Image (cartoon, rainbow, N blue to C red; front, top):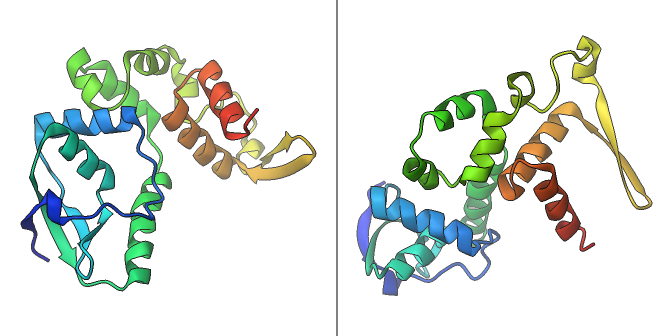
Length: 196
């Protein structure tokens, strides 16, 4: 599957894109483009030239004044194009950082390089100040081995549900990625999501 150079004006952003790109996200992408260039191509549906992967990158390139980009143009049905778009975003959501390794790498970065990662200084400081035995998953190492398989109960208003530890860790990591590593930011994010 070969990439080709296309005019951005020939591409159409996905009107049904399920990923929201806020201004912070677009700034992170723009900074990456300035330093590293376009290191991965758009994925575009051939029949209508709709961008199925890379809508945030498209917006960032436009804001930078770029007129061309690299794209892989695929012959996809509308349904397959939608599935691919969701899959690309969801597969990223399903992975989590190895926070111990992440901390080791972040600790060695200069501030300008740290900014390119999408983490800000406050997030990095919070991660670096977290006791090492709590970094990997948010649980202290003094837990009972039987806790590994146990779950957690959550109550939101009248609703109560149980989640496994693995589900909790995935949710926790996703929350940290969107809100940051401190409790106040996480609480604000949860309240915003619940419209409280």
